[in-house]
Image (cartoon, rainbow, N blue to C red; front, side, top):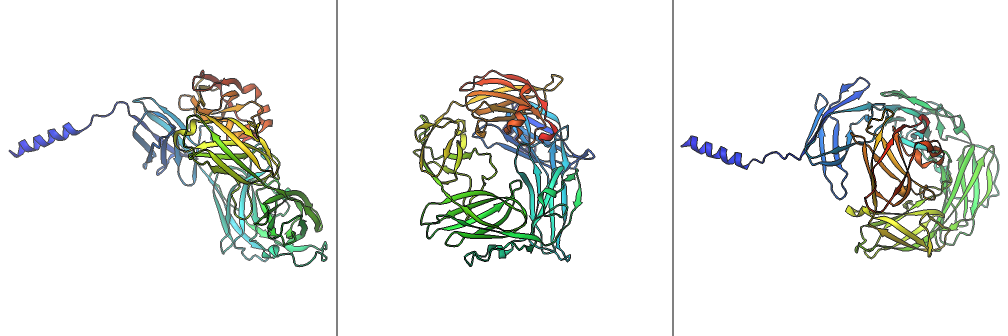
Length: 547
C-alpha cells in the first residue's frame, strides 16, 4: 500500500510539472578582465528589454570561472549591462562600451558570448599648504576634453579628508587634467562695507585653485596619461598666490530683492568665486587669481521679477573695478500641449533645451533653483515655465509609460512657427505644442570594411538643417550581435545616417566633426509610421581625436 501511495504522488507531481517553453531563450558566456584575459567573478549582468512600456529585466552574477547563464528569457530586443566596481566594459578593439545590444528570436540560445572588462585607473594623493600641513575639504577634480566641447568636462571629483587625502577611482584610461581647489575662504563672501573709495591694486596673497603640476595658471596645466590599472600618486602643494578683487554694481536692483554674482572659468566647470551684493547692488569678489573669467549676476525676490546679466572679464595684475552689470528680466511662458488621441496629459513633461553655444550660458541658477527648464503638464495639457534665462530654446516633450511614441509635430511661439527654436528675451510668451502619435521606426544593418555584419557599432540618425542643434531630433542605436539595428520614435523628416565603430560621447553634435564624415553618411527620408525600408551602411572607425 505504501509503495502505491508513493507511486501515485509521483505521478501527480509529474503531471503538474510544466513542459519547457520552446519559445524561451538562453544567453550565456564568459566575462574576462584585461589585462590578462582572466575570468572575472561576481560581475553583475542585467538584460533589459527594449520594448516600451515593459519593465522586463533579468539579472545574474558570474561564478568563480567568470561564467554566466541567463535562462527562460522572452524573445525580443535587449540591452545587456555589465557592472563591476573598478572595471568598465570594452569591445574587441579595447574601446569603452556602455552596453551590448542583443536580439533574441523565439527559442534562440546565445551561448558563446565573451565579454571583456578593463580595469579602471585611480589617482590618489594629498593636498598640503606651503608648510606641508594637510588641507582638509579641498576639492580635487579630474577633467577630460570632449570633441567639439568648449569646456573640459569633469569626470570625477572628491574633497580631501582631515589628513588632506583624496582618491579618484573608476577613471577610464586616457588623458586628464587635474585641479585642486581650496576650501571656501569666507573672507571672499563678506558684504561690501563702504562706498568703494578704498579701491586699490595691491594684491592679496591667498591659496587658489591649483592645476597639475602645481601651477595656478590654467594655461600652464599639463595632462596626465592614465593606463589600465594605474594607481597614480599625485600631490598638490598650495602656495599662496597673488590675487585681486573684482568690484562692480548690479544696476536697477529692485528694493527688497537680493542679488548674487558668480565667477567661473570659460574652459573648466569650476566656480572660482561667488558673493552676494549689498542692497544697492554693489559687490566684491576677493581672492581672484589672474586669468579670464565669465561673470554672471542673478537677482531674485518678491519686489520685482528675477533678472540675470553676463560679462567677460580679464584679471591681469591688478584689481578690476567699476564693472557694471545690467540684468535682463527672466522670461515666463504659458502653454498647452495638444493631441487628438491622448485625453489625460498628466504623463507629459515639457522641456526647453538651450540652443546657445556660447560659453557664458551657465547650467545653473542661484539660490538652489533647478536650471533645466521643465514641468509636468496638467491633465488638460496646460503648463507654465518660469524664470527662463535669455536665449534660444527648443521644445522637447517626454512621456511616462508607453506614450513615448509621440513626437512634436509642430510648435508655435506667440503665434509664429517655432519648430526649429525660439528666442526668449525676458518678455512673457505663449507656446502651443502639437503632438502626433505617428513617430517613425527605421531598421537596417551595419557592415565592417570586409562587408561582414559588425556588432556594437553606434548608428546615429542626424537631422538636416535647421534641426542640427535639436538634440531630440537625433536618433541613436547600437547594432546587435548580427549587425542589425532599430531606431525608434523618430520625428518624420530628412536625415543622414551614420555608423561608427568605437564612438565615445557625442562628437556628431559638432558641425566640424560632421564635415569630416560627409563621405560616410547615407541620406534617408523617414516617413510617418513604421513603414521605412531597411538601410544597409558601413561602420567607419572614429577619428582618434574625436574620443
